[in-house]
Length: 367
Image (cartoon, rainbow, N blue to C red; front, side, top):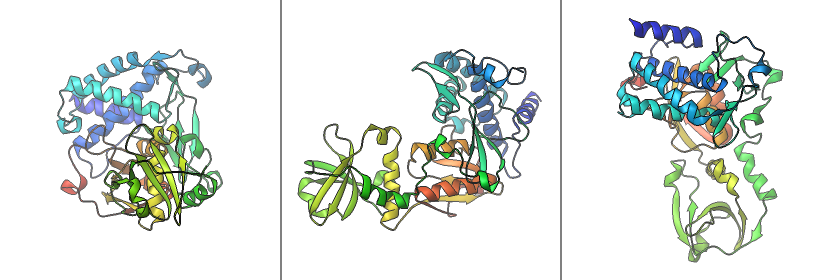
């Protein structure tokens, strides 16, 4: 019964225990995810998390590691764990174990870097990020550091969470995750006032985000031409140039007067263009709606459209994939963090409703 022994050992070390209505496969997938996240940190630190007694500042002085070294070693770890623990083939898109181990290892390292759990020093070198404790709406989130086991912590996917926080400490350090201080519904007024608007002529061909549908964002873009200027709504619109490298830009219409504000590369790199889409949906009276299902100890949430990077980081740290190991759109959130996630989605301009339908009541074998 080596499988059960390994599962119990991982569960004890990382404080990851099964939910009352969680299938065996779903629990194994969660254990694998938490174990691989911890192993990635170990490979960057270069020593066991249980044997090191060096002070935190000494651990952080460890030399940088080539990301290819981490990927190579983590692939071997993933291969061994997936041989030992029964991973459902559907959870790895039907890949053979060796291929799946490599893909999962690469995805894990990139997610930890994306979420500031590790530090990217150069294109190839990574290191341990400094320890930060973020006080959010309801709980505290740990980022970085070199101590990854504590009985008070809740390991949730790749994230580490502390118990509820005192009222006076809430919302401290939110900016360290990139989360905004302004709600989406106030963002519109701020743009009207502060954006660098200038007179413009529309490009010959462009696409416009048709705000207010409340649905999937990638379906909300429609093509237009310069001759369609009278079809532009009053106020702010998000446009995308169809030809060349012009990228995204905002257009403000006042009567028949048009002015524009160019969006620099940061908006694309950080998916802040998606925040603008949620903002416009909210302003036009129909917020984007995400569906969820309450499954006892956890929530399954379907995000139908991309999130800005800041909210995506929070979701990755507060949940784990539902359908496959790299699923960004269907996520499982423990019930104790649901209020936290709801708060940030509402601030983004997202409405959630309990209308999601899942196979077998959400207790799905592939996660």
